[in-house]
Length: 304
Image (tube, rainbow, N blue to C red; front, side, top):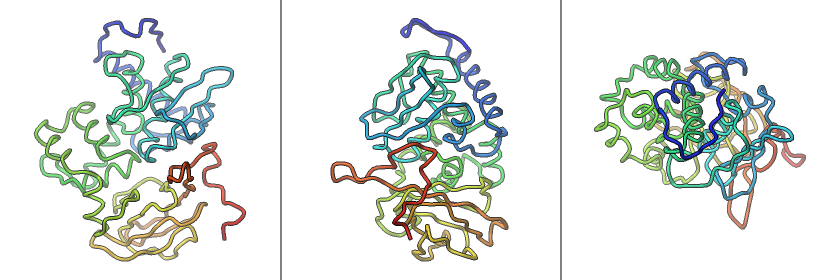
C-alpha cells in the first residue's frame, strides 16, 4: 500500500506500474484465483469485502471507503467496460485510497494518465483482469502470433477475459509491450461492431461473447439480448438462452431470460455456466443491469 497526497505530483510510472502489477497478483490470491485464468471481478470484490452496485449514473464509477467499502458502477456503459471500471475501483480499495469519483470519458482507459492515484488504479485494473501469464497462455493455446493474428482472433481472447477488444489491444501494446505500434494501429481500425458483423453475419447491435475451443473460464456472463457464440452445439439449451442459428464460427445463441444455466459444447469437452442478468429501461433506453451485483443473476418471479 502507499499514500499519495498530491494528485498532481510527478511520479515514476514504471515503478508505480510494477507496484500495481504486484498488488493485482496479491488481490487475485485473496480472491482465490491463480495468475492465469480469467477472473470475475464482481465475485472478487465480494472476497475483498467490497459491495458492488450498478446504478443509473453519469460517471464511470465511484469508490466509497466509509462507512463500508462500496463500489458504484454506471449501468450506462457496456458490460465489458463495467468489468474494467469495477477492477479500477477495486484498485482504489486495495491501494488504500480515499473515496473517489471517476467521470465518464470516451477513452478506453478510465482515468488520467498524469494522475498517480488514477494511474495506479488503471494499471491494477489491466493486470488484474488480464494478468501477464494469463494473456501469454491465452495466445499460446490459440496458436496466435501477434504479428499475424487477426481482429477476430484477438476478440476471442478479449471475450475470454471479459474485457473489450480495444482494451485488450491497449494492454498488449502499452501494458505488456508485446504488440508493435504498426499492428496496434492496424488492429485498432477494426471496430467491435465490424467483428460482430463478421461473426454473426448480420448488423446486430447487441454485444457478443465469442467462445472458442481454448476457453478455460467456468462461466460466461451475459445480459438479456446479448449474443453467445459457442464452437459447437450444446447437448442441452438452458431456458436462459434461445438458439439463433449456425455461422462459420460456431452456433449462435441469444440470452433471453435471467438466471444461471449450463451449456455443454461438445468441442470443449466440458460444461460452462451461463449467467444472465436483465437489462433495464431508463428514459426509454435499454441499459445494463441496475442493482446489487451479487443479485444480478437472480431470476424474476415472472420468469418462466
